[in-house]
Amino acid sequence: MALHILMAAAENDALPGGKVGGVGDVVRDAPQAVASLPGFDGSVSVVCPSYGFLHETARQSLGTFSVRFAGRQETVDLYEVRSFVPGTRVLESEVGSASTSRVRQLVIHHPRFEAVDARGRKRIYVDDPPKEPFASDASRFALFSAAVVEGLLQQKFGPVNRLHLHDWHLGCALMLREFDRRYAALRDLRTVFTIHNLALQGVRPLDGYESSLMAWFPDSGIPFNAVRDPQWTDCVNPMAAAIRLADAVHVVSPGYADEVCLPSRPKRCDEHCTFFGGEGLEEDLQRARAEQRLHGILNGCAYESGRQLLPRTQDSWHQMLDILIAELQSWRQVNPTAGHELGLQRLGQWRESPRPRVVMTSVTRAVDQKVRLMKHPTDASPLDRILSATAGQAVFILAGSGDTRYEEFLSSVSRRHNNFVFVNGYSVVGADALYECGDLFLMPSAFEPCGISQMLAMRAGQPCVVHAIGGLKDTVQDNATGFCFTGDTPEELGDGFVTATLRATALKCEQPWDYAAIQQRAFDQTFNWSNSVREYVDRLYC
Image (cartoon, rainbow, N blue to C red; front, side, top):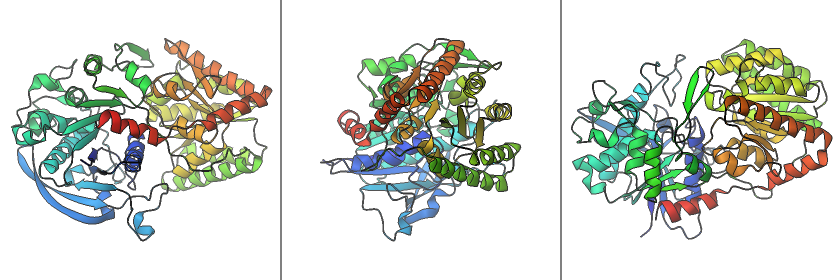
């Protein structure tokens, strides 16, 4: 029997504007890779919410259907939509023909999926107040989950025999399939649940609030004990429920699969206390492993045939600066900030100077997971120490946006060090320029389920400095394809980050031939999606 896989996710970078983080990259690439496997004679459909705009590239309407939610019948619209042609950022409609692949891109539209920010721009996720975390998103994705399950029951996606759900946003789909009598016919459908970020679990109250399990599904028969959060026992945990109920649980690297089964241990950094290991769900994950349901499969990366390692020259340096200057100028027109002015001034000064001996780069979200180890401790932060030690030899360009506290930290470092620029924003063209021109990519993530930035940097021939954890440990080898550090405390991790970075910059300056060998080996690494999705078929969909 040919497989028809339905992937459901909150993000999909195959659609214009459909990505926020790494899950969007995976949902863009993995379906195409599955459909392209030699001998695969099935098909893949990918579905996500419309968010009020993704349905605007519709190729055709697939009709409407009714979904029971929050005690009411809600009507949702299903569309097949145009996507980017694989390997390009060009829409199918712009080349005059539909994709010939066996991948369909679908969106479900309902007014409740739409959200706007303070400037009226439509967005994928909602930033709720701290006292109501996930409240808006949990309700939106509970409705989306219900629509996915109802659509399966009514065969709105066609005859599906594998259901692949991504992250906590689809946890309610597994609850309904398992416990709601209306969906008993779906219980033989094999389900796969992929964890991209265990730190985000979508926890909400079981009852008593508009955004709660009982408010969403008052007559579903879902037993509280089966879906409770291990710590907050008056709350539902969609991530935990999905781990308990899925036929196969997939995490996005072998290293992370080991780490999530470890006991959670709090590590205090700044004013935050973050749980590592299983993030409080280690018992559920240990049980999944004991039942042989837990699988660690590394994400992949797309590679062009015939690619070559490009030299880092004065011309490429200028080209990169010109791209970043143009991006900053466009962002300044929309939302001018003092950081944009400083960035433009400094990049302009660098434009008139020779290429530095070492160009350090980073493309990241300015959030706790990604930037914490650059900041802690606040006095003489690791980032300050690196910049002071490399002044006159190296410059560092970091592009990204996110948490205002970390944006302010990075902006303050820019003001203190004239060999650092914080490019406060993100664009594909700017990120590509940094990957292709830099000598050393810094990625000191506090934790990393898989990571894509290190793969993209290595693909362009840029060795990385990484915290040897999760997918970073699986993709970067110390002194062979990059530079790694470890530590058991925030202080040890900060010191390790500084030491590894200075070791790398010294090697680049003092032993350039040895550094070139590491650069070549980094470039030669390939983490092909074809290898990863072959494991999907053999281990997850079997």
